[in-house]
Image (cartoon, rainbow, N blue to C red; front, side, top):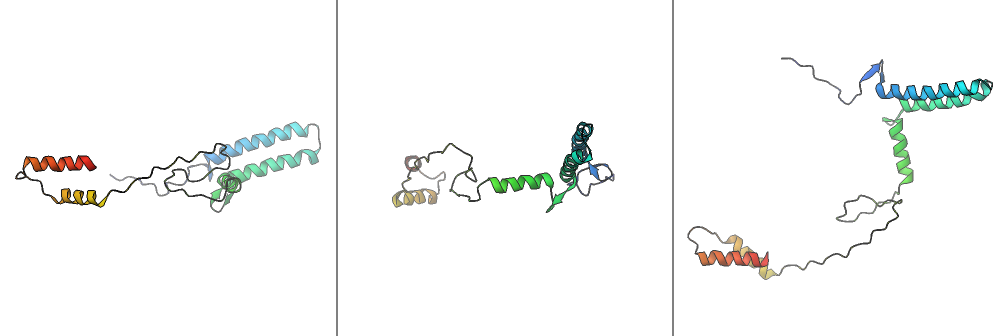
Length: 157
């Protein structure tokens, strides 16, 4: 059987011409706000009063719907811009911490827990472990030797 394989799965589906559903919703909301401003202001004021707010709202709506900067849509670009200017630019790396950065908005300062100092194993225990690992335990090995090796393993590790 022949199946049609989609070629560009990252592209959003278009609804009307090249306009996607997300863009259409943005245009509907922005156009509704601009129209509401026009209706409410044009009854009492001249064109000089209602035209600037309607044009500003329409321009912002068109920017959010269609404008792309550095191949990012305008919403993502604004969020990245705000993140860059609001968050700290200095990152502090702490080995073993799971959190990538210290937030400037975090009021609670976590106290550093004292680290447990791990004493290194003596070379004697490493030699014993090497001996255990190098020893081949098979059916011919005596039970007392097996018990001694098991005891040695459980004692140190």
